[in-house]
Image (cartoon, rainbow, N blue to C red; front, side, top):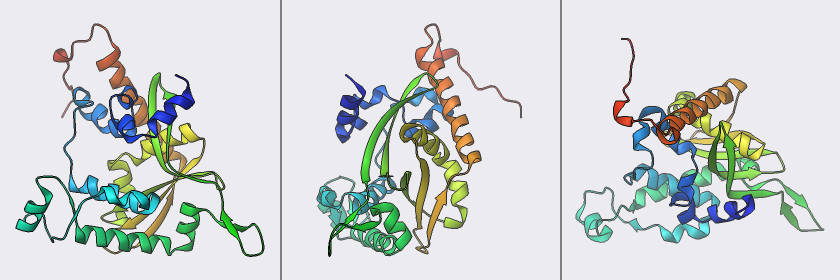
Length: 255
């Protein structure tokens, strides 16, 4: 299977997140490989934050797919209405959906953000306008430090030669700290190698609804590269070293 055939398969979420996609490392594996490599590929429990994040991205990038989300007209997940209607499934609350729609409208009403996300319109005739070359939810693969990696860019803006990633944050003033904690630096490094473009984060504060556009410094990419290198070393040790016995592994540090 050649590269284009692999990328085409990874366009399908079932393949991207399923067994086929698990032959590739991804930025979401960085935390596990750096903290507890033995937990790699263990199924993660669905969380409201993950569900809300998925709706936020879909609302902006693929609004035609919003029907796949089940929304409950309840203020919390502890009400009888929620428990009866959800059937034990993790569902969105109407308030969460309303907040996301408000944030989407806030972002898209900002001209700079709108141009980054949709591209700048250009005239093609007397009254017709088209947008520049923009792709959404774009999968890609590459090799880094001897291992195969996959990624899926929110937005590839070919006109500006940028990868745009959408984020929400609890405190935009501390987004630099969040970017390190949640490994956005390694994400930026991986994606820059995959697509050959610089990365920009379009961020909105979930409380104040302030918008931020954050580009990446050379130091940011370097920190990301260091994380990817160390994660690759852990993967090589735990999963590619023939005589390695994980039972003999322990963390050794001086306090």
